[in-house]
Length: 322
Image (cartoon, rainbow, N blue to C red; front, side, top):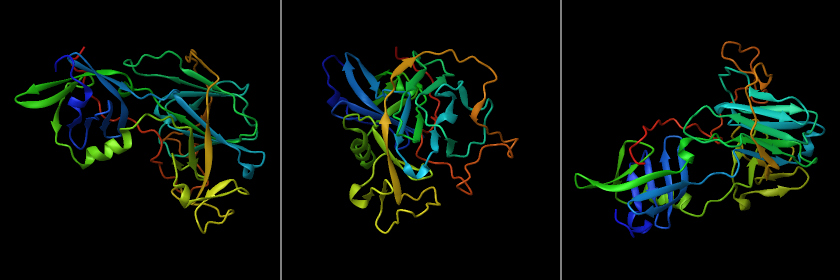
């Protein structure tokens, strides 16, 4: 690759339909693989390509709505917090772990209920990796008093969301992409339907998620087709045709009645020491202690949701690009 070459000249799909990187002509890309889908921007620097992944502006996501059907109760659904060491402090209470030490046998959804609406929510994490530099591990939120129904997300930092370098070379007459994330070489493949689908989904400008929708069991949707729903002001829900406002959803995957949750931004970010031992937890779950383990009672057999953050299961080997 020589100086002066532009992003357009390297656009294409590198890898296979199972894993690889798609480079789009507008300077956007997406790294894809099993349980991995990370878009971002790339640009050419002399003989290298610099990849800058899209990063959410916050490690946590806090979404809320006013749910009058709860009366004086408060509900908080925790999504993705089982992926690491995570902590929460509600109001003036002591800090707690979200899950107990050694927690396992996770059966979503995890819904915390209270009679006190939190005027302050502090969310923290303790990162267990070495390849990602962490500055502030705590975000503080101060939701409005009217909010009593929350969805809390944890977007665990990982190496795939950190900048990396790449280089396009010729290997035995074949055009390949080498990246610093792995020692594997990804050959360039002809444009195909998979690439077009990835381009349609990730080739545009990055967008921050500012709202989401959920049914009463917290099945999440990032967006809905508004012409397929009608907003019912009495129940504060989006309903599909024929759905009654007082109809009780008993299936986790039933999205006939949804509430809209709006994003709340943190008022402060800070770094906290999280070395305390013996902290209590919001949820307790242990395969060896099923009688005491948390269970979401409204669903007879809780189904593991597929809409929350997914762990990255591939383990690339560090490459040679510096």
